[in-house]
Length: 327
Image (cartoon, rainbow, N blue to C red; front, side):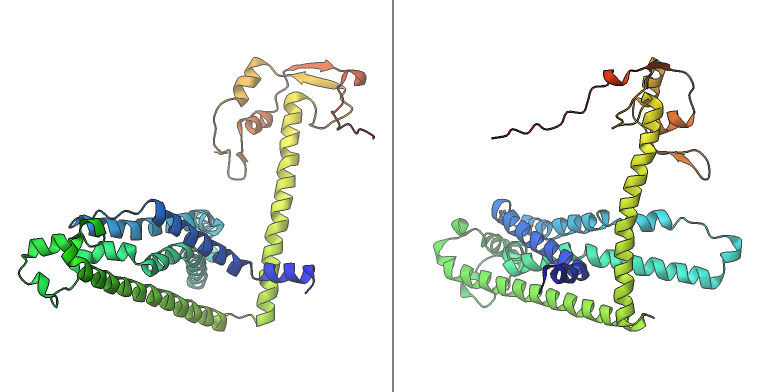
């Protein structure tokens, strides 16, 4: 396989590769987190809170991060406020709008769930978090050593099982068996979670493809077009914003950055410096225009004041260029 074919293949599978990278990073982070941060308190009630916190809170944080770092999230929020005209406010147009919102929201949620589901699956397969959380609730009625113990003493002893140094020697064998059973329950839950997510993903993909009006090749072309359009749009937007910003900077200083033949420069006044200095957010000017920065707002006012000084071409310092040393 040539390099071009390999790049094309990887580009066509970028969604799968991205999800795989997120999953691997989550696995590595979970292992480091478990090694350096996890330490069961081995105390009744506290075990459950601590274990569930280590299971659920990182998963919730990863879910929120997945939503935040998805561009479609903010595209959905900023685009859903678009107001249809009266002619377009038909039942069919509103239905299409809601279908599109549901589709995009489902896509966003699917990507955001990769990291938290991976975290939950790996922590359940590890077994330490689950054993810490539910050790005090383990069923030990079959062990004779617990028959003469009160409920509170039994609960305290079971809560100490994750910490070997706190368990009396006569409970060692029972402790190993109980922890082994809890680890078994945790790992079974982890594999069931993985299997459920895999089946749900497969069925969802099958339903989505069967309901799609596009053929397989047409869908691949559409995906390729959307990716290329987005990449080209970002390149054009970057170039357009540079040119636009350069015009405003030229109005402020009297020349464009990188100019070689500078005949005059503008000396900004103190009022000019105060106008463009400080903090600012995007400002809506009217229905069609807005100001992106203080300098942009200053330039839109079309200022005519300011001192302009003519410059001889020979006085303009040349751009420093790297010197080459010949051997």
